[in-house]
Image 1 (cartoon, rainbow, N blue to C red):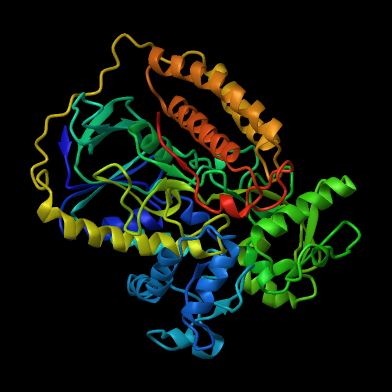
Image 2: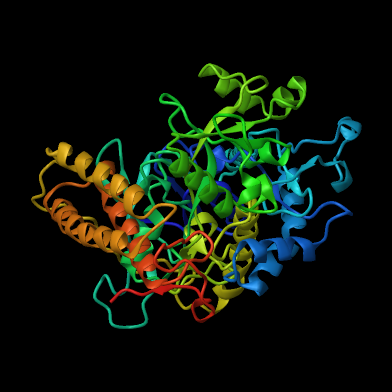
Length: 539
């Protein structure tokens, strides 16, 4: 058993930001199942939404967020996070994050708010997106990791995957439940470590890999959400899975995202004949919120039988396009598409979970000692549909608030500072090595195809019921594997994917209306009596 004051699971903007602050007050274990630089944050292109312009206001940002959230945002939480944004952005800049500056201010040092270059994305009424060209997440990750590497109080466990949380109830105690630690798989050796801490922070990102087509990296398998659910934490709003409207459509491209900022800079959505169509679906056209744009593209593809639509920015100066979107331009060129001369073939793909582990505005879950920040958490900010670029804002704001809340509560916590409660080691027993990987891969593929076909952009009750039935069967099969074989990353991810898929389907069946990202053909209108978050509790 290894003791730490804090255990942070996940190395994106939320986890790294929290770890840096917590390390000033104790020892920190940072767990990441791949390289420490591999996170959803690193793939974020667009930027971070924050009020920094005199032409903008907190009230405008709040209203844009509430409108996008389709009546389900928690207004108090929304105002808190948005109003604290500028302070958190200043911290990022102090850590070395290089946001793009206006050309007239490029030589100034340090940058002030008036010197930052801003762009606009769908659903925003003003330009308020701070960015670093089209690799904003990568730049933020770089700066945070540099600070992490320089901190002696943080021990980073790369290629280690959290297996399950350890709690009082798991150990058989009938008192008020709380987390005590976590089991962690060393992927290189196959050993399972026991980490002891009364403060576990989940920052594991989302669950995009539960769908066949996604903009997310391979690590996005909903691990933190599944672990929290198994430990007894409540889950909220999992029916609201955001599909990004514009993922590059190319057989060799995998899951490459075409940033919403491209539309923010004037790109138009067109069909294969070059005809615009968004104005038929929404007066905001290409700058409508993501749920509207994704459904419009999906509808046009189904109506015309086309395999994709196109994003056209060829009317902009070629030098501007290459300078503003260098990563997108270079990647597309690798696949034979010159975006300065040719429209980009695009399709919607699973992108972001707006629900997650239910938390308060300080990241505290319903299980004592367990916190969730970033995409894994459901604070109430995103409601039924996330406003573009609010995710990085929420992650860095919640990391700060979570740290501050823990510091306030520690003097009153009888378990604080001792970390002496003995925890049992992981026991594999007589389990065999997993020798039926083909079955694991088959189940993995079946879940992702099932979710894409039955629980996608447009749903029906019958499809959801079919998905629920099959997922229950898969859950039993996977659980049998889990108990009969030694754990490895493939098996753990499959187990988590199935759990998360089930939570999405169960939440979708509860909501008998269409709202935001949840669109059910059997209930095509929003219903006022269902204007509340969905909440799932175990048993």
